[in-house]
Length: 348
Image (tube, rainbow, N blue to C red; front, side, top):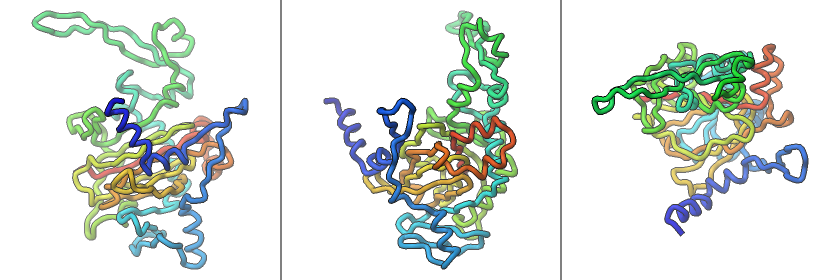
């Protein structure tokens, strides 16, 4: 047995990995239709219910505390996880709809980078092209470069969207709707270089929109050191589809961990795992609903966390408030089976 095999087996036995397996989606293979198996959520913390209880009688339950701060709604914490704060229903329905639209229309636009850049380069108007049923086709174009004092002609693929009927004869093509469903992340503000796991200030980028900056500053307030203001410098937008999960990880690339990560949930309900400083620590599972905001600062920045499951079935997704607001069918079709997470950081 190789050393890597031993390491993989050990990681599969950690408390965090066991929790991921407990809550991840499994399908009933005995049925013709793809039906998720039931999952036991009896131990999942429900901050929406905690908020209802707190508003009713001022109680929150064991292990949960209410942060005393100048904020317009209750902010909850976990006694065992200092620096972690949960604000249920922090975003209005109108705000949720607005940022869902922006996440699909604006945030994946170049020069912002997405997971598609590695294969296709910058892609313009992905969501609109998917709505118009276009396909992305490659055009071979010559590229001259100097190599050891010799000019070599190399084929450089260039991709562009065309009408579906015009893309049938292309040697390489992929539909915009497939690309939209395979969109996993986009980056705003300072760009994160995934290959080097660091921020690359030299990469072209747009500033985070002012409205999102102001929202992040307001939401970050309860977790900020006294007298300081949050400075939004970078954001990563994660897109989750049916069966997707985000494995346990640390967000440790920012310079000052006393400043929070501001994490906004949009779309289908999810389960969020918050572990400890080691994968061996038993994580706390909690529901994340559309409009919820999570803050992680200080010691909480050292905690492993992840999303093992999103609920895309009509009974458990809990997005009826969004369905009643979205008159635009393409947005509604997308968000019915998807979750979007916008997490904003102060890098320096």
